[in-house]
Length: 283
Ligand SMILES: Nc1nc(=O)c2c([nH]1)NC[C@@H]1CN(c3ccc(C(=O)N[C@@H](CCC(=O)O)C(=O)O)cc3)C=[N+]21
Image 1 (tube, rainbow, N blue to C red):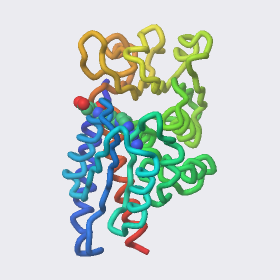
Image 2 (image 1 turned 90 degrees about the vertical axis):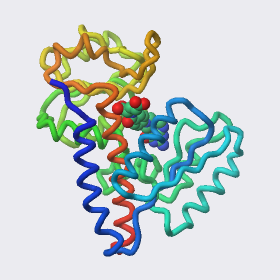
Image 3 (image 1 turned 180 degrees about the vertical axis):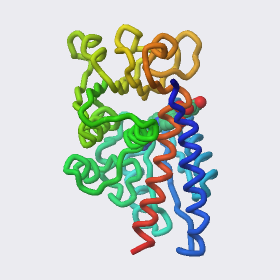
């Protein structure tokens, strides 16, 4: 059966919209998200469009600051300093990847922790690994909501993550561990990958390679979560890391691309912005 991230995201957004309606009267203003987009990276554009649409649906304020790819690091840091100081800004998202001449880690660390709605700030990363209250990164948070909403049991079960990025693979592995799954993280240097992934009761795929996961890599009845955002080299269409048509018959539950994890990532970004707003105004 297909798990629809699109439907769950719609339900999450509808709930948030109801909540947001009460804010002007309660707090005198609306949550405000600012996205900084540097250059014209193709993958980034659909995300920015998606988040603008979602923010409008939920009724929060959102601004996109567009800068050319040759902006200096200094200039970008100045923009962040200004947004940090602006009390009407609750969330700051610096669209990644940044051009090579800019040190992304330095830029992300410059955002005030409380305004880091991506959960990428080093203090938020540390808090996640120390089981402290933190801003959860949007994609891992969205994946956990999908699993929970679908009633997938995690405690004591075998979860395999393909990919070890700091933005998806590692944090989702940590969240699965926190739910008492037995977690294996695999990557490009894993030997006999298919033997490992076939054992997975929950398989999370986040490597960024179109249709990388084939039917022989999926165990019978597995829950398959596809985090990929790729272009199909043949059709040019958006596709995931999983060969959906081939793997769907073997999986008990599976997400699609588009319509799976992506919309949940966006819903969680809006949720993180609302949470950042509430922490500030409800003091
Ligand atoms: N600081 C930062 N935070 C991010 O979270 C971040 C980022 N930078 N840079 C780019 C990637 C990519 N990403 C996507 C999220 C949702 C969809 C999404 O919702 N896609 C729709 C389809 C959209 C379409 O049809 O084009 C779907 O999967 O159904 C896509 C891409 C977030 N990213």
